[in-house]
Amino acid sequence: MEPVNVALVLSGGGARGCAHIGAIRKLDESGFRITSVAGTSFGALIGGIYAAGGLETFSKWVSSLDRMEILKLTDITISSSGFVKGKKIIDRMREIIPDRKIDDLPIPFCAVATDILNKRERVFSSGDLYDAIRASISIPTVFQPFFTDGNYYVDGGLVNQIPVNRVARRDGDILVVVDVGANIPYEGHEDKIVDVRLAKYRARIDKIQKKFNHLLVNESKKSSKGIGLFNLSNRSIGIMMRRISDLMLERYPPDMLIQISKESFSTYDFYKAEEIIKEGERAAVKAISLYKSGRKEQ
Image 1: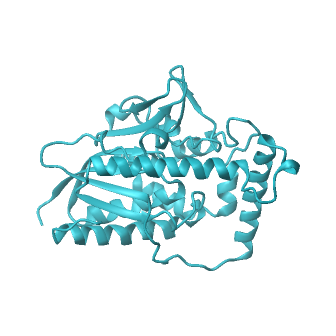
Image 2: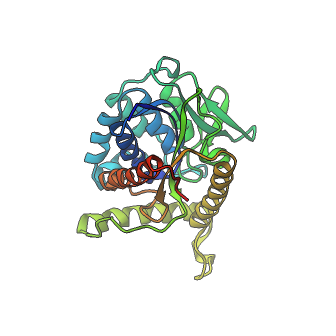
């Protein structure tokens, strides 16, 4: 087929955002030419890295990380604004893929963040690439807000989880959305093998979560039936983001919708990057087939 120009939109979704890598690969392999990218949260990270030409380098790096290496990159701090500083991971990425100005990228790119003090959406379409990414990935209660240009920024998903209205789109471009938090059943491709290292990793994550919960609320006074303030906050935010996503997709229907189930992997399964990338490839192959046959994913 003749190359088809694509305005690509990548949703937030934590570790499931690694599926964006697989989806982009299959789009490239299938003759689609990505001419612009917009992303939120981890979608902003992958979109920015792709626009900078470093996607395969990043893919190899993130796929090589094991559980302990990921924890080493997590600069934990006890703070009421979030327990991950986020500096270590951004600094490491700058080493792997040199920083660029968004203005100089070969592909137009923008990242969405939430200006928490002014209660508004902020679209980063110029300036420092990693500053834009860091602002967009600041998941509330997890990452500390990112301070730049006199404002504090948190995750863009609070205002625009799937920024279809922000991507640069020219005449003839089709709109392709990769939604890694889709409310669809998971078909269960994930390898369920559990080893001792995985158990240790989960124990570390549980310990961190308990410490943060203790900072927020006296655990001894919690009801045994409660789900914890940390989980309650994250679940509530997740419901809100899903509703915003559904409204955006209704208002701006994409020509191709690549969906990854929200049940497929957890938000913090970064050590499963290789599996998540393959899930993105599978979902993209399915969506591309539907597009070529003249149908859309329902």
